[in-house]
Image 1 (cartoon, rainbow, N blue to C red):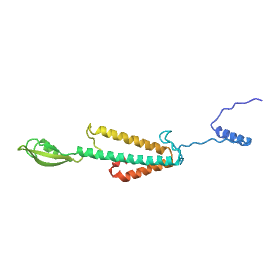
Image 2 (cartoon, one colour; image 1 turned 135 degrees about the horizontal axis):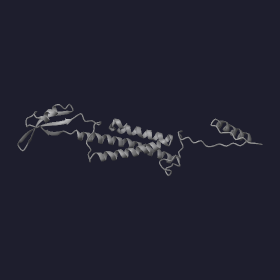
Image 3 (cartoon, rainbow, N blue to C red; image 1 turned 180 degrees about the vertical axis):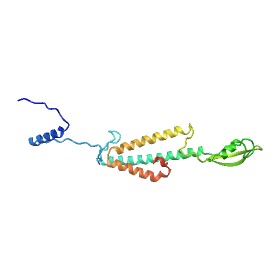
Image 4 (cartoon, one colour; image 1 turned 120 degrees about the horizontal axis):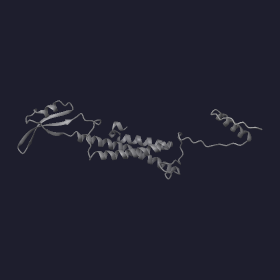
Length: 211
């Protein structure tokens, strides 16, 4: 009996699978393969968190893990509030009033006074500065147009601290993201609960862009 080899087509997959299933059914043998779908939420307490060693084995350990995630989410919102507070403080220092000596010696005269008068972003006040019996005409300037979106000079006392805070925020945020990606109902609800509690407590200090 001769055997003909036929080319394999993609459309033959379904028929081959059906024939195999029919053969198994006719022979009385059944085989089941586990189907793993990582996009399905589950409520198994034995869900690893971050590492294999961090795997709850009892209901009490599972509850403790969820409480840990609640606290971690609260800390995350607290870090965002800390960053917002620091940014506002640094901006206030940047906008601090400074004495500017008016060139020419007379109040309201000189090129510096003219440039200040033409600057819509500067709030000005003409004053007289007196020290050791000497008086000098000055202009107190406070710039009101410098905001969060405008570039400020790099400062050693500010930018390294900002970078450190942002790094810690990113690290905690990634840990929370990993917890949610475990697709565990309890972990997801714990992160959401911590976010709610943290925002309820310190949300007013968080910058709008950080929400």
